[in-house]
Image (cartoon, rainbow, N blue to C red; front, side):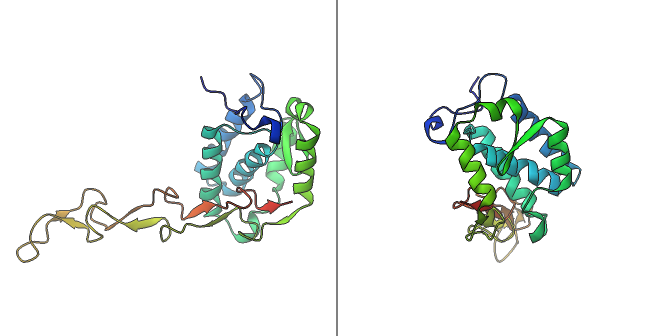
Amino acid sequence: MKPWFALAFAFVLGPALVTGEEDWVKSDLNEAAKRFDQRQFSLAHDIYRNLLLAHQAAPLGATVLEQARAGIAATTARLKADESGSPGAAFVERAKRLGFAQVGAAWLPAQVKERLSADATARLRRLAQGKACPACKGQGVNVCPNCAFGKVRCMGCSGTGRTGGSAITSRGAPCPACDGRGRAKCLLCKGTGYGVCPKCEGIGAVE
């Protein structure tokens, strides 16, 4: 099984997690997805953002990183501008209940905190004192450049919603790719309408 935390960049960002320590990551991803389904978008957003912050100290594996980034985009699309900054009370309460300790901008399990390098700890502290990312204005995401509100013109019907038939005798059948709507989900942003900000990597803050 591929480990959740990649070793390749450990010498830059800090140590990867050892076997067993990654359980909290999987648990947080499941919790965030659950809260999203319950329409508790602010709490889900805070959990996803915390995982991206943890990535600044202990690199996340590609699968986890992709899920956290997709979660940030999906939740930001449902939040007001002032709800995507500092973590809310519900997130902090949950973190304390789980025994997490605050390390600068992130909340991490105690055993993970103890293994952080001095450089990784310093980076999280600088992020806590940093400023809102100027590229995304602290949102962590930007509007997707490939679509409009998560939709693109369907390639199967060129946006007409119909396939086959004749322009003279028939309009053809509804396009099976878009169900006759003429628009399809954007694959780049997975239909969220947003993409993770490349400057701050989705955390909304810069050192």
